[in-house]
Image 1 (spheres, rainbow, N blue to C red):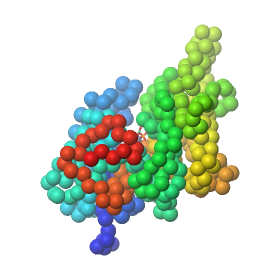
Image 2 (image 1 turned 120 degrees about the vertical axis):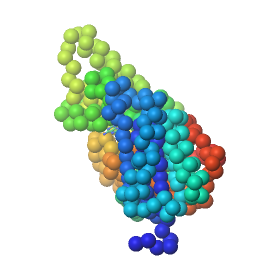
Image 3 (image 1 turned 90 degrees about the vertical axis):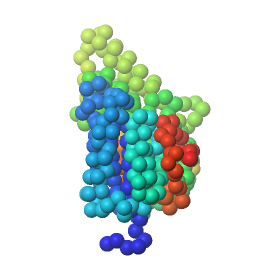
Image 4 (image 1 turned 180 degrees about the horizontal axis):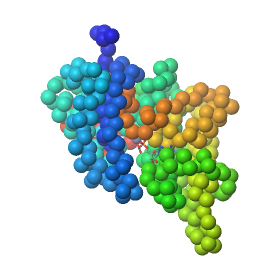
Length: 344
Ligand code: KG4
Ligand code: ZN
């Protein structure tokens, strides 16, 4: 039932290879979540081709927005705000969503709210965990980011750790390519690892001397490549499932260890994970177990809300809207936007 207080957000996301739109009511209720994925298109090239991504977004964006409104059983004029991802991401891809949102806002007078993509990922946790509220610690692991974040309040973040080189998802994608699994690597490694022995190969767990919370995955990636080369030179057969499972275990262990240490040292007893890699089954299991052992309440979004979607942008957009954030028609795409760094 619609009441006077209900706040409707139309959200748009186009930062990478998913064209997505959603309608979210009162910040936590997803009325529609439409995602048009380009994965099949980019698989041909072994990764996301930015030019192709932008072009495909242009083709799809209006259809996806219309479908989101229709599925939600509502109309554009009923929206209280239009939320859109304006960074970080691929600049050409971001521009498609930002331009569409600006055009709709200009035509209707509905306020425009720019959303940080990572804030969206974190906010995905609010959809299915109505009781979750800041403060808590969140690990964001996606194709472009690996961040340990203290969520101090809605819209208020402190980054306490991040990757020095490859993001966790990037490492999954590169290793998957090296062992012949193809793109996108994460879900494929996740699946094939179930058949493998995670203790078959001892890959290194990167420790950085100067920061307990920062991550580094390029050494692990090189170790996998060296192992594969070594096998090739010795004429030994490679067991894809064992390499995948051993690599996955090395990533998961580091993520779990850093997160638990951060929770202990910062004194939080609630922990959430977010981003595409958060849909990894081994990571979810290991985090859940570690949290249970350490008396920490563990939250994770369903896989569909872990990978890129617009519902999460609608949730983050709602809290930004409530905080009074309004963007003008000069809102631009910011490919390297940092979390907690608003650009207006
Ligand atoms: O959050 P996301 O959809 O896009 C970015 O913002 O980057 O994350 C995509 C990343 C890709 O690197 C993909 O391989 C990884 O998330 N991923 C996974 C799984 N599903 C997606 N990694 C490990 N296990 C999975 N099940
Ligand atoms: Zn993402």
